Length: 62
Image (cartoon, rainbow, N blue to C red; front, side):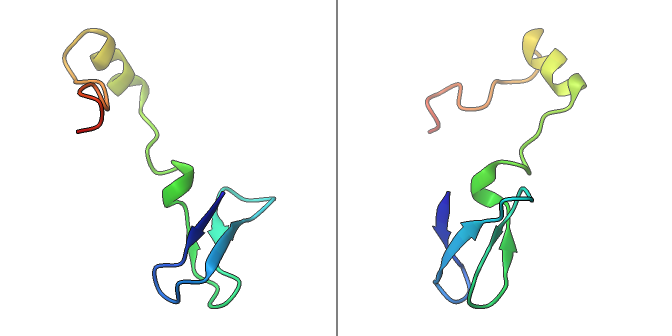
């Protein structure tokens, strides 16, 4: 995955040994495009299954 650094706009490259992208110019690290900050807990999954919590993107992402 490659995305642009929000600080210096260089292309960031995913680190092979980590779940993060690293900017080769300024060293900024990010996980936004990898989805590692979007993990669901077992309780959240259970609530979605039971209909007590809406599924993410249930309306097509709008």
